[in-house]
Amino acid sequence: MRAGSKNLKLYAEAKLQARLKKVSAAMRRAGKHPEDAENIHDLRVAIRRLTQGLRAFKNLLDRGQTRKMRRRLKKTMDLCGQARNCDVARDVLRAAGASVKERLDRRLENTRSQAGRELSDYLTDSTRAKVEKWKGWLRAKPGPTQTIASAARRALVPLAAQFFKARAGAAKPESTTEDMHQFRLRAKRLRYTLEIFGPVAGATWSQRVQEIRGLQERLGAINDCAVTRDMIADPSDRSARARRSEAALERLLRERIQALREYLDGHSGAETERLWLDEFKKIE
Image 1: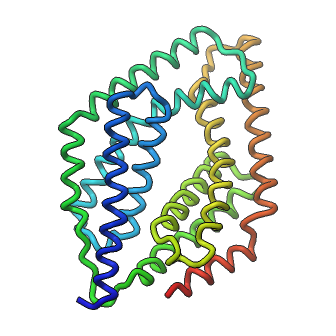
Image 2 (image 1 turned 90 degrees about the vertical axis):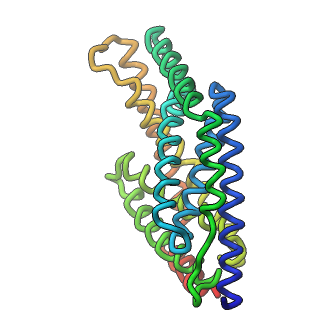
Image 3 (image 1 turned 30 degrees about the vertical axis):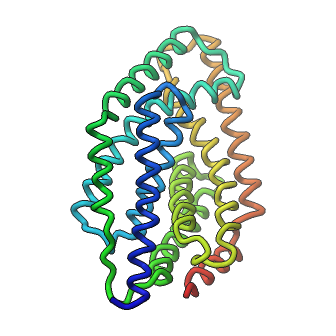
């Protein structure tokens, strides 16, 4: 095995094992205390980071085992999602200054409790033991000509192109919250891949991560409003209080969209796209 290929094997395994370790720890905490919103958040982030690692190094891993890992990770994410949405809805409604009916508050509380129980029931010792066995599945098998630099180029160049394409769509005046959600997903994938390769991705990689994080914060705030709007929608309730709550939520959503547009005006323009893509293409 050539030195470059061996280095990539060791590098990929170290990055994947570190992310698997964080998923295991986050599963343990969330399974024990699913009522803690921070535990749910940490588990979701840990899963996203490992999933992106599996994407970045997919050509080095067994496809069948990778599919099995991703299916289990997706199921865990889905279980986390309902709990997370309830936590978000409460925060957004408070931020909007919306008056919440007792019936809605009770529904959110009951849904959150049920979601927490389902997640806890799933994250048993048996489930976590299966995840621990993935350590043996994360054995990289790179080809003879692959290196850390070539893996970084292969992952980052298309991700950056997708990121800027999604940015252009989200920046349009007629863009929807779904357009912004897709941009948010592309931003996460690019950021987590940059974190995987670190300095290999270029001297400014940490600056790129910070810029993407700023976008994520604004896009996440918009997505939280959209999720909350869908959760509290009740066509049968056209009371004055319900309309005021909806109006307050829409105002907050518009404010957050405006904050994103202002941020985009000063970041991630056409010149930035050229610089980022050129930098990633020249990784060596």
